[in-house]
Image (cartoon, rainbow, N blue to C red; front, side):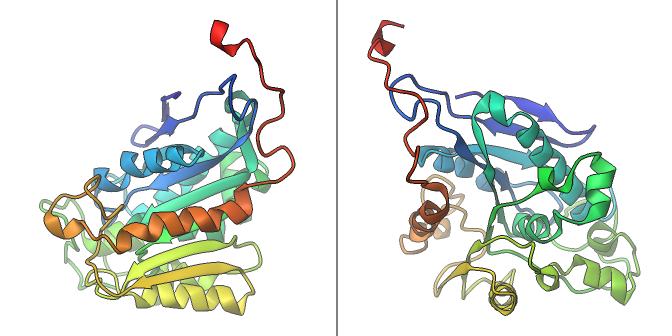
Length: 300
C-alpha cells in the first residue's frame, strides 16, 4: 500500500491508501478511488469514520483516501470551506491518476454525519463554475461519479444567536458562524447549507443509509434526499435500519467506542454497499487488468 499525506493548505490534508500494483493479480488494473469524509458536526473529524473506512474499501479492491478538512473553528462557514478542500483532494487524485492507477470515471465520495453532508455537497456542487475557476481547473477534473452518504445531515436549522452548537466543549465561535458563516444568518445563508435541494442532472447515483432511531440527525434527511433524487431521475439505493443510534460507522468492533456501537444488523450496510458498487465499478472488459499474467513475478 502507498500511504502519503498530501497537504491541501495550512490546515487541511488528506491521507492516501493506494493499493500496490501486483504482478500476480489485477495487473495494471485501474481501480476506483473512494474519498472518505469523517463526521464530527463540522467541529472535529472523527477517527472512527476515517482510516477504518478507508481500509474496508481497500479490502474490496478500491483505492481510498481520508480527507482531514479544516475544523476546530479555525475558519467560519466550515461546510463551504470543507467542500473546497474536498474538491482540491479530488483534483489532486485525478491529476495523479496515471501514477497510482486510478480509474478517473470511478471517483467516489463516502461521508458520515457532517461528512455525509459534505459528500452530498460534493455530489451536487462539483460542477459549479465558481469552484473550477477558484481551483484553476476544468470542471470535469472535479467530477464526483458516485456518492455514499451515511446518516448524513443534509440540512440544518438556524441556532439561537450566540449558541455554541453541538459537540464543542470550548468553542471559538458560535454554531451559526461555524455552519453558516454568520452569527445571525439570513434565510438565504441557512438555505445555502441545505444541499438536499441542490440535486440536479449533474448529481451522481447514490447509496444512502440511515437508522430510524437516530436521535442526532433525523432519518428524514435521507428520505428527503432520496425523494429529490427520484424527482430528478437519479438512481439511488436507500436503506433505513430500524434499530441503531447515530454514528455507528462500520457498526462492528472495528469502530466501536462503546457496546452500543456494535450492531450486527446495521453491520451489513457495507456488504450491501459493495453489492451496489459492483454494478458501477466491475467492468466486464478488462476487469482483471490490462497486462498479461507475469509467470516470473515470484522471482522479483
